[in-house]
Amino acid sequence: MAKKLCLGAIVLLLISLVLPWHHVEMLGIKVTQGIFVGDETKPDAYLIIIGPLLLAALLGALVGRKRFGRGLGIGVFILALLSGLLIMMVQGGIAEKGGATSLGGYLGILALLLTMAAGLIGTVKPEKKA
Image (cartoon, rainbow, N blue to C red; front, top):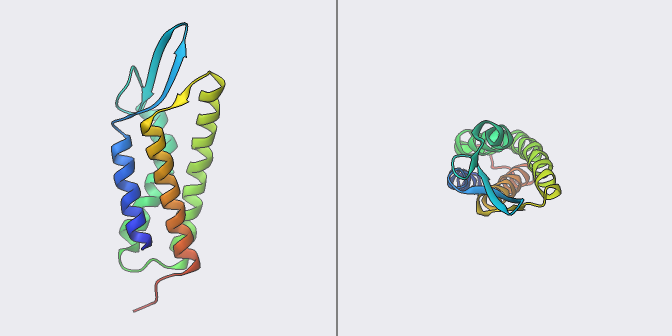
């Protein structure tokens, strides 16, 4: 179950790469910001933000393919929590400027929640050794 959640999170993150994450209206001009799409593209900044989340989802999907144990669940949860804090900081900064989240941002948040759920499932109910 936890590996499938991590795979779903990877798919959502890949889709969110090509959708705008935020939109801000300044002086009557609407500016969309995204990773690879939008009026302002900032791949390096957003990839730093979602990097721990992508690493956590990849660890859960690839390493957890054999067995999603308690240690892997804790690691995935901690990396997802770190990424969640980074996303919350960016969301707060955008909200201060009067901006709002777009579809890519919502998909990134959903991927974060899926990865955190996978980490919790792996920690609480790890797979048994073969």
